Length: 102
Image (cartoon, rainbow, N blue to C red; front, side, top):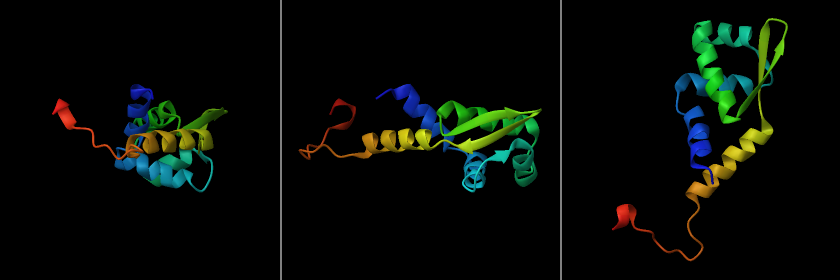
């Protein structure tokens, strides 16, 4: 598992505004202009959050005219689920691994 990619995925979920954006995108693709209206944040702030969400692979964007349209990526969501599962699955033999080399 790529630790850097895992960190990028989890970073996407570590901000209240990004969680709100994801909730808005659950109903389907949204134009950045609609996200701005719903979120009451500035355009640079939205761009910052969308870059993190897109870099994580959870969200994809497409340009139409002067606006970006964003949607949740089913493939990105599956990858995030796989990373979460890999990090939280107990070893099949039930062995407890000590922390910090104890």
